[in-house]
Image (cartoon, rainbow, N blue to C red; front, side, top):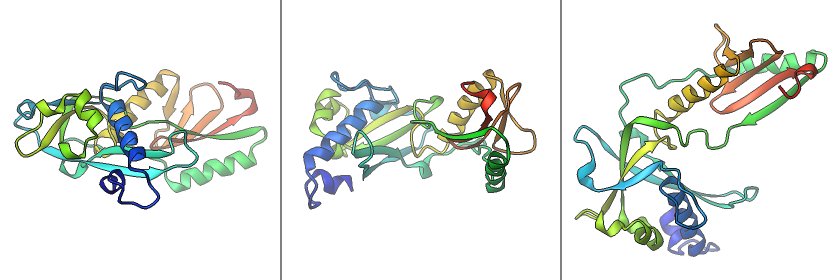
Length: 231
């Protein structure tokens, strides 16, 4: 856990490394650190009194991992406790079935001049604007001192030791994040003349070019002919 990592209770792991990693994550989600990280305005620290009465306040969960192949190897991510978020609308999104993907791959190997590539959208769930904000609280004791000082959290901490955040954009863990991100992606694709097929969920085609692809969340499997290169 981040708590154990940041307090040096895990052998072979330096606490400063993970503290810095969490500082970077909060800075990215909030309004930056005034130095090398520009914030995304995904979350704002607010006083408890600013939380609407009709909103259920959820918790934050910190996830840590080591990714040797990434530029930032020690990765800390703040996720939302989605089980306490209530959405009164359909949050499901169409996704390609395994049969669709198999047919797509078979089409590639059996079509002359066909090519195949995969695309994975970076930070797909993040930075998607929300009109209906959500709220989260975390104990001030979990925040690095650098964050407490930069965001002046001592003036926002409650009597029971919590700091409240207003979530204004998509975050991992929000049950509606996938739906909102998919709608944004769909709008962009349609504007470029890509359209979902009527009876096969997750399969998209181009209006004029010989390009089609399967879409599973933010993962594309694209089949295109040599004549469609660069399009």
